[in-house]
Length: 93
Image (cartoon, rainbow, N blue to C red; front, top):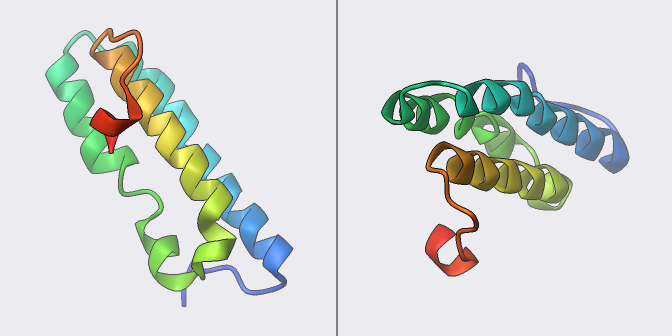
């Protein structure tokens, strides 16, 4: 499928992690927006969907590190936009 990595498990996992790390630039920009509502909307509609295609085309054990990175980045961006010190994992999930 177009955009899906093909190769060894290490290659696929590295590709997925690189794709997840591309979202960091967007998240850094979202934190600096003056309108928190717009920032949250963009976080939900742009950043949150970044790994959807890979999630449908790659096995889950190849996506684990990328998904963990993506979730951590999403949570920290969410906390920064809302100026929260720390959101408990139970509330995040």
